[in-house]
Image (cartoon, rainbow, N blue to C red):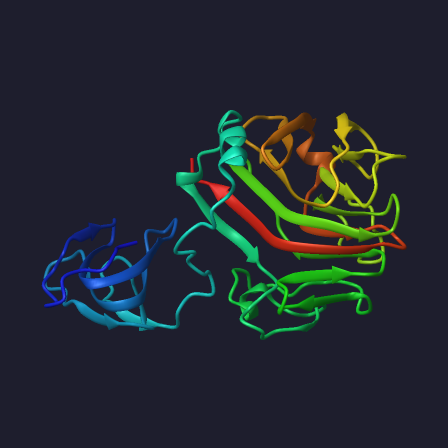
Length: 311
């Protein structure tokens, strides 16, 4: 991605891909290169010239809001902007959390957002979560939330997803081997005793089941009877560490490391590392990220983020 270029439209720099030369003419833009070496360019601001890398090729001038692509000896052509969205800046995580994540191999500078839902968009987008999309609220992700239709609603004025009925909200997500992923959300259980809200991964898209079947982490309303726990799964099996007794509004994070034959899930609350567990990728069969709520509680979720760290 390029930053703003000179105001006179003179080239600032060029970017070479296997199939094209992309010339910045005072712009910001995103570039995708497929496994087949097709180059796709999406322009956010300013101008870009897309030039295929073969003799006698002509450049294609692209302006803000346009996208172009080229492959092999094909002329550059305009295309519909790709559904994949470019996250132009990664939301800042607390320094203590970034320091803790770094000790487990996470590099925020190499991270890209896959899913982001702040559950707020300047007062627009309030209403049931079911069937809505993070991108409709200015976030990242075009898949629709699957969730019980009653008791799960977005309050964009306060920037919170409010769950007052047990169940699970899910978005499709299939981790690939050889990467590191981070999922996090701020959770506040405001009612319900030992009731809780949870964040994590599951292999079950059923919204009535409030127990995730993959590695997950919960936040309780009260911890005088039961602590908060992370679980390797399935369900409430394989508790990780001794848990914690923090209440109120806390940011819960799971680092999923798929770089080895046995995957690894590391659990954090804010900047505190709670523990880790080995995950068998075949038995886990992760297919969704999820937010979950225990019966008879009121849970507020904020700032859901799923990111991938480039190798």
